[in-house]
Image (tube, rainbow over all chains, first blue to last red; front, top):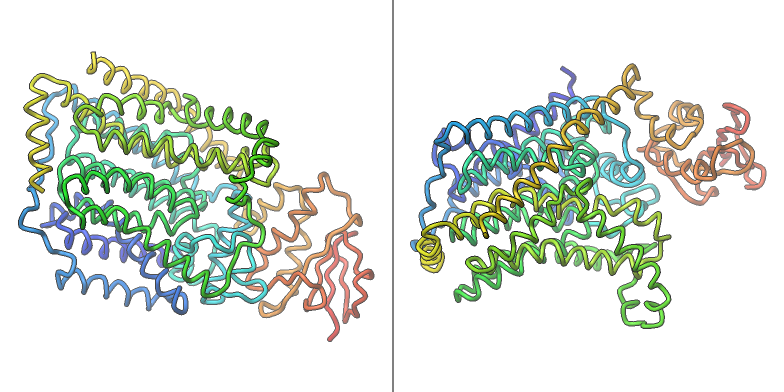
Length: 474
Length: 144
């Protein structure tokens, strides 16, 4: 085994241990069996925690070295051990035991779904090991900026440094994450990065299963994860080293956590969503907008229950974006070639002259969002289930509509006022921009089907009333 | 009725997903086959090949230019290209491939000039030495 590969394994072990400590502190893990079951979620949680800590360090000083990263892990473990995060309020509802798959048919369906997931993960591994052709954006921006963090040790404003590349104002978490991989490899080898991204993607798929299985039977969980794994967007993104990959993964996991919180009132899901959501806003520029689309419905749901502190939880990841904005302002960093200017929305003449652009973008974006070939109809399925849930779970129905409609309208508006040639602009971005929406649709589908089925089944009134009373008690 | 809609939605999504399974494995096979037999160094150059770039200049530059030096890339009509995009992408690829060497946009601040079909004389700089890698591809060390 090469030193670089051994370094990446050490990095992932660090993520795993840190993530387990965080999950323990949040109340997800109570014993050895729990730890094994939650290992994939722990890996993702540890990765986000480490990347967030390293990003904070980078904003005030140098990019952490491998040994400094180990010190950051020690800090996280210490915080968990001191129980700083483990403050379970006395009124916290006890989560219902996870549903068991009792029927043979259900177990067969679950096994078939799991088999598809395993096969896709194996295929993704094969491709990651071959380090398939790096996409132009990865070569132009993502990997070189991560390499500058490794070589120059900070956000370097000198020629050839971090800020000399395009999209200067992009938040740094994705670069920091790859920069940490380089630190642990001991060299900046771009061809090993897809393998590290594959590890995180595999952990992401299994994390979805871990989270869903708390409320959904296995016969729905595994086909749902299989659907996510064969999603054409995921197929393109996994191992690509584009920031859209972690953005999609973190967005989907944050969506599950927030919906689970609203369904059961168990606050640890909200805290985990805060952590993952901070990753969403710091991984890519559109992350703040996406997080806002996820946060508004849960915040309103908590406010209706007169829980102001809970209402602030889903909105708190946006503070991470504020920290980055402050850093940009303090260092006078502005993007040199913006793609659009928001003030153009207030120039009717400008907008009217570009209606052809709007029409074309609407057509293309609708195709990307709703066509079976591109999206597996997941965005459409999410919208179709929203009215069914609106009767019993209004806040969740609002969240679903918000997750699909708001980003689509925002992207449409940007295509409308954008400067770039519209055909090239759409061709280069529409697939990636709609990936988080489809992934959220895929991960939520088993949960939504379960809830809609329960809500409209025999004894639905009793069932809903039980959950409502549990949620309101929280 | 509502439960029927739930079942229909789940079934449609699963059918749409099932139709994609074969495609995932086909695309993986294509990607892996395309890379088969390539060395680590060759795989790093794939993004340049994608734009039909001659890669000899970048290989030579990695050998010649010390990691602490600065460089810039000039392009021009001194080399045949299949698309103007090749010339546009040449400096972009160099910035990826030649790190930690620092790219500067002003040739007067550069220790080295990499010419991808460009005209070195038009820069009005003094060169300590010039090396022709292939016709149209040159590396020049700027005299200080």
